[in-house]
Image (cartoon, rainbow, N blue to C red; front, side):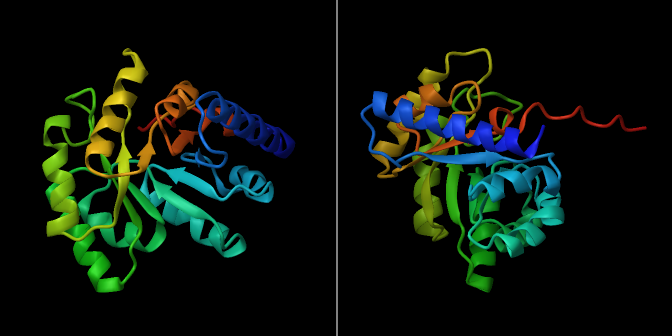
Length: 229
């Protein structure tokens, strides 16, 4: 994809976000686009930065650490979100690199994040990931355990919890999951809702999303993963 193509895609997605917000009666600027740059090399991401976009999402700490320090040096206003699972042994790198961690989902991780934040003074925004579909293979706290876990993150660990995140099952109606996440957030006094991807972000906006995670619609189809021998 050309540099112009990425800039055009960004513009189209932002227009659709604005239109969906207007349709839902949302205030202008109440939804942030997290451009998902996972698997893309720095050269493919730069056109989006050159176009003025500042918020990006990455799935893996190691991958992000290999490309974003240089990009952030050139574009210091960039905000980087971790949207993939975080292993406890990578918490140090994550806290140093990311402005927001959207996948807090278990006490061991919350404890490790709190320790690292206390040690370094760096305090990235935290989102609790809720496994709204209760899928065995997917990360996230179960909905029935969400209230107590959110309270523990705030009160026991002192984490800066800003909101919730979910990834609905592909084969189910996403609006049911977005509504559930919004309900959990409301009763816990949380305003941040990270939900919606390339295929359903307009629906997510209708249900109150403040962050939408869009990759393919911005950067194009990702190349196939290399075959490992």
